[in-house]
Image (cartoon, rainbow, N blue to C red; front, side):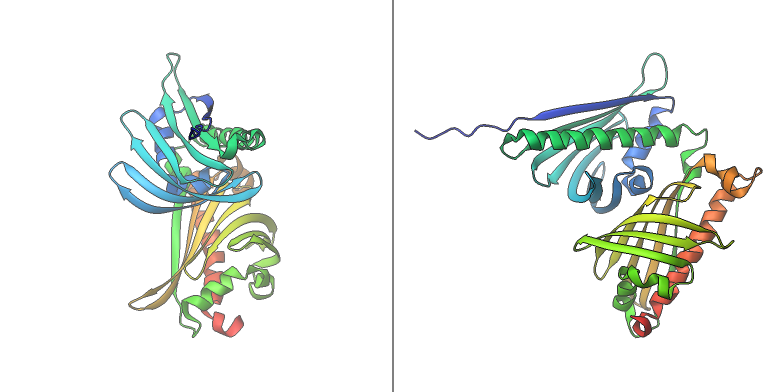
Amino acid sequence: MARTATRPTVHRSEHTLTVTAPAEDLYALVADVRRWPAVFEPTVHVCHLAREGRTERFEIWAEVNGEVAHWRSHRVLDPRRLYVSFRQEHSRPPVTSMSGGWLFRRPAGGGTEIVLRHRFTVADDDPAAVARVEEALDRNSARELGALAALTGTGHAVDDLVFSFTDTIPLRGSGGALGAYTFVERAERWADLLPHVARVDLTEPEPGVQWLEMDTVTADGSTHTTRSARICRAPEWIAYKQQRTPRLLSGHSGEWTFAQTSDGPVATARHTVAIDPSGITEVLGPEATTSDARAYLRDALGRNSLATLRHAAEADQRV
């Protein structure tokens, strides 16, 4: 007699947090995955694969239990119900399936209850694997709910605090896009080649995943330390997420891209930042505003990334 295969146990988790922010503002943050690396601490990078109507597919890299995990997700957005459903297309072992949803309720007493639900299965219903997944969900869900509460509870409009900008330069050197990519990828040499970099510690636990700790010298001569996770996809792009940010920021992510255009090869640096309003007057003075912080960050971050791009443009002479 043929044996009947047993279905894996579906495990469920639910994490909630009630905040004062409007449900629509919270939904908008969750719906826009392009902002996630700057908003949600675990998220390193998101790359869209397809978008049509209310559905989308994307690749996502995120920190899970101290490592960078990677998967593809499918989502359906429902702005009328303020609901976002998701499922992983290919989960990372020992997880065999993962799905869930974001829901934003309006309690009778006011505010918004954020609800984050997960459903998952693991290979062979291994209890140890279930415990590890539940631990990761508990930790990352709490961080994500906390990030939403913190960003929407500052008294400032989210769009004033979270913004993006880009700088692009042509690559005139004979190394072209590949030479520029190699210069940025080999960041362990930056302390010898870039005037704004004082120290670099680069490790690569697996191909294409890097951890970069760096001391950067600011325009006033002071030094701050950042630590970033980097995802490298030769020869087209390198994405990064700062795990340790300067005082003025609650989040900072970015991407270096290298492309061949009709006018020749170009390199682009893109930044997405989330300002920490509590640091504005401490860093910029008692009269400083969010507008001052935006201008300061645009100048400081843009200046450093442009310096890196200009050196990358001469990569054929330096690498």
